[in-house]
Image 1: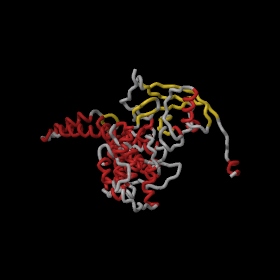
Image 2: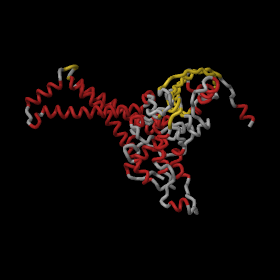
Image 3: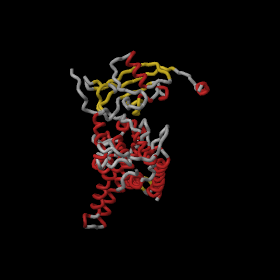
Image 4: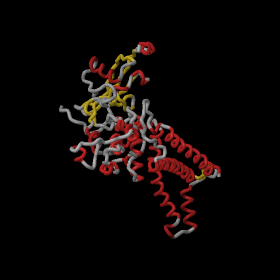
Length: 254
Length: 155
């Protein structure tokens, strides 16, 4: 253990960065930019810097966060033009002295960097992202057997199950911008995740939502969703696999 | 003043969509599709007029096509040739990329099988099979440009 510790470089660098924050003001209904200069170390994240600003410079700055470790998906925001998790992005690794922070696009703003996720979660719910069985009595009341799953069957959907619903893909998608009712990459990836699960029997029920103008057919494959996903969940692949199943008439491999 | 919920969504980051190959192919696909659709209407009208709307004669054909072709610009190329050349380029981009999208979405060309991944995770649009097909589209378009330039300007 001690040898491992000795090999680690514990060099701490310090630097002062300028944070330009785009803030939505609910009283006037407009945006304004605020600039803050903060000293951070190479171990600190953008979220740490924002919280430092909040505690030492401007208490009115609104930020949403929860776990600070890339699990909850609350702190997604546009950092230097790309939707990212503030808790997983380090100012030192961005390579710029001025860091621009904006609220997620394609979402309605609430205050400053906080956005309204209601529409996003409604769309997520509309694809029935839960385990659906034909026999509900057996599923909820007569619990006398397990739903068996092998390693191979797990891998069929595992990468899409990494989604933390942070909204980065939804914010990056040009088609969500063009079509307000488009379900978005996250909801469709969730639909594939459950349809490709061998324990699930609800693919046919999800078809009505997926196979529509606002479902997969609004996707024109720009691939931006997969490129910005902080968890590597690859929603573009899920949508293309859904399109393939719809066009060939075969349900997702499971 | 009371605080109220916004009714408009946050504006998009355009710069995010102007830095990737997929995004540019998407832009080309949409723009070329729109221009080709408009061109098709104009093309039909011109040819129908030149054919005298069902009463073809050499005189109307020569007059209408001569008017549309315009004067000579470079070598054997008329103004009409240059327009046709640009339209053919759009058709090449639209066709090559369209074939790629159809093959990918219908036959799953280049779509990897879902797998257990580890960090750093590279998204499928950035991985080799799909990237190769995208470069292939660009290669096809470049070859087409060379051939079309030869036909249009050299003879």
